Amino acid sequence: MSIIIPANSAVGGGFDVANSLRFNTASSDSLTRTQSASPTSATKGTLSFWIKRSLLDVSQYYMSTFQDSNNRVQSWFQADNTFKIIQKVSASTTIEIITNRVFRDPNAWYHVVLAFDTDQGTSSNRVKIYINGDQETSFSTATYPAQGQDSFLTKGTSASLGAYNGSGDYTSAYFSEIVLIDGQQLTPTSFGEFDEDSGSWKAIDVSGLTFGTNGYYLDFENSGALGADVSGNSNNFTVNNLSAVDQSLDTCTNNACVWNPLRFWNRSGTLQKVSFDNGNLRAIFDDNGYNEYAFASIGVNTGKWFCEMKAEDITATGNTRIGVLNMDYTGTGNPGDQSTSVSYLADGQKRVGGSNSSYGASYTNGDIIGVALDVTNNTVTFYKNGSSQGSISITANTLYTFYSEDYASGGNKEISANFISPAYAISSGNADGNGYGNFEYAVPSGYLSLCTKNLSEALS
Image (cartoon, rainbow, N blue to C red; front, side, top):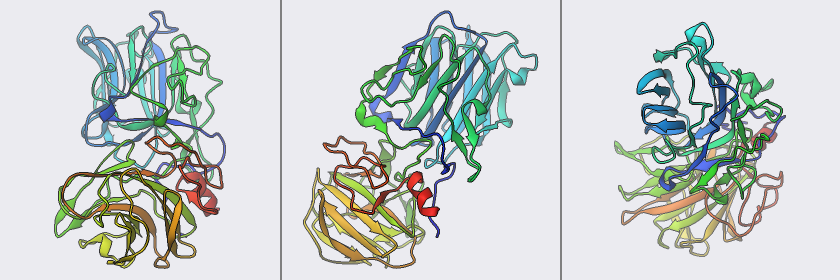
């Protein structure tokens, strides 16, 4: 069995995180609040959060606390995908730390801990950065604060999550389990542990921690109050441009499939790229040429797997295709011509191994196409708005993934995938047989959503 599970994905049992919050740059999403001017400590604090990056190679802020442009602290992933934290006090840089390591996996969850204690005698102990349980020690820049220097992490300032000062450099990412501890410099073991079976770093229950005056715990479980602090402090955040549809089931304890922005194909020496947004769930085929493809991030060669794809901006022709193909394809020809490729065309035809033939009903904007992939019995069945269009045979002993395609120029086309929870509103709500997922139409019996909880069961 060779199921592909994303990196940094613990699949053992234990504590489960129910929800994450999906931020989208184009929507200017953020959470903001003003912290108390009298923290438990101005020199000690810890920020912990889990993040699954969606957009790489651009500067994106995940946290800032801002008094004014001369007095602030912020952290972000830079355009070169290194991690940086900086603090300015009276326009002077008191903290500037930049990792040598880069973080370029949009299919994995990262756990980030920033731990401050400026009362420490050793300068490098005053600010510590941990990623997935390990302390970062290799930096291109390492400026540490003076002993006893106040930190804006806990002081009374305008705090923003997902943006710089709530109004710029917005983040495209999923966030889970955001925690601020006011008054203590904690280690990662207060928030996570290594899984005994997989060796991966995983989340633990943090509800018993002492949060301090400005501390908070955001678990995003209340879709009607996404900025709710559940620490007991009621340090609630104002929600800006986020709504219930941004609450996701893709979490740090159940990593879900997305479109893979690092996967594209090379046709005759020309890279065919597709852009993505909404947490790498919407593929935008931007008319850069023929044969633009979106590949899912998880591949399987056993079991029964299901997803839904919504046609958001297409025309009902054979140029729009939704289907499955071998995940390990790396050639320079047309992926849709591969012998393993099977797709359902918007004009109602099917395409199998590069040849079109009659199949089912046409589909257009607003229609939702279900894809039921059975790589145990070697079939795929497509559904239009919940109605089966018929079973199609696929190639045995193949590592398959979901994909979508635009075959022609002539305007942008958009396909939004729902691998576990959609980035678009649905009127229903259906889980798979294991209780995972939120789909518009009933999941066919025996089929599961592509997430690490289900993959773990398939591997057991």
